[in-house]
Length: 310
Image 1: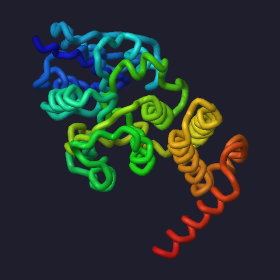
Image 2 (image 1 turned 180 degrees about the horizontal axis):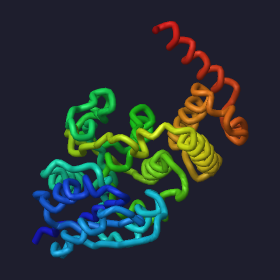
Image 3 (image 1 turned 120 degrees about the vertical axis):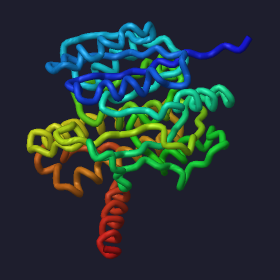
Image 4 (image 1 turned 90 degrees about the vertical axis):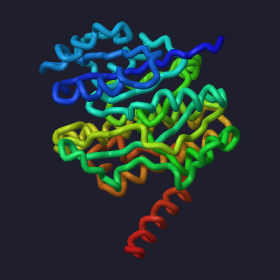
């Protein structure tokens, strides 16, 4: 008798009363039914929790309410409650295609892999119009029906995308390596997803747009206030330093360290390019232990080359 694996779907919720029903409908109506749907209300002050409670008649839905801890804290709570073979993250203002989980599980079971990557479609709130430049499409580098093993780090280094909702991962990878989201920062996926790659030994790619990512006014992704920019700088400094610790860890191979360094260079370059280092003294010091003069010259060369092309 074939065993149908359980999938734990983690949905962090905070003040999304306008969107939570569309999100949960897309999960409970999946063609794949063996689900543990963990909804974590992270101290919402609107009607989000009331709308979630209408789904509790479905025995697969587990509802957890907690004081506000932020996105990382809500996801960590979900991870502690998860008991499925696989874990999938869905943000509460987004939604899945109805056949997403069934097809992802089939592919993971077929090849017995740790991780699967898939595409995401971005759209503007209310208009439901695609934002082509923000779509997550990895088909220019990754190919279907290829088992990425020893070249896993090289391919991810060249095709990195941090949003954790673009992956389904074997829970054993998270549990065995005691992985969790760093709490109290923004852009926590930059660190968590890197750690997932470092601890996964096999990966496949599904060239399908299973995830629908909503861009809305005043969301975490679109808020560009001075306070938001300040938190962004502080968060990236923390992420950089955590990546630096990983890089200096002797347990990681040369190929793994290339992936880590790629992420560090991306953060370093981004902070320098946007002049954000001047707003945070700590950010001026990052990279002294790992990023060499050659790295800095390479970044400068790329910037000059890009200017010439434009």
